[in-house]
Amino acid sequence: MKHAFVLVIGLALLALGAQGAIRLLVDHDNSGLLSWMPGGFGVRLSCYVVAAAAGIALAAWGARRSKQTGSAR
Image (cartoon, rainbow, N blue to C red; front, top):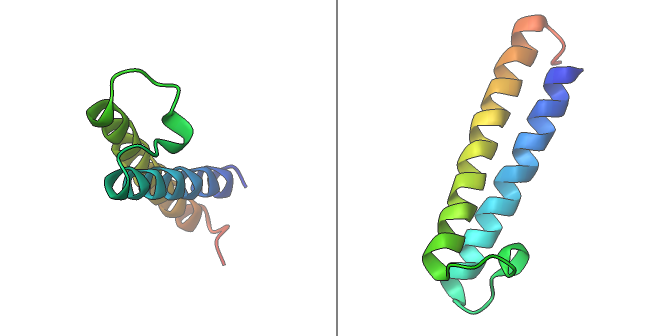
């Protein structure tokens, strides 16, 4: 169950990071969730990319561990 939770959190991070990065690339003034963050376009884009990468890593780890323990069906 713990691994499924990590998988879901990873997928949510991936979705938020990817859609935020795409939104920022299309419209540089629309920062989304990171509008409070100082630093401008480059910093915000980097944060969205890091969130997406962390989401991929968490989702992959959760899926792999879930399959190893046999809780994924």
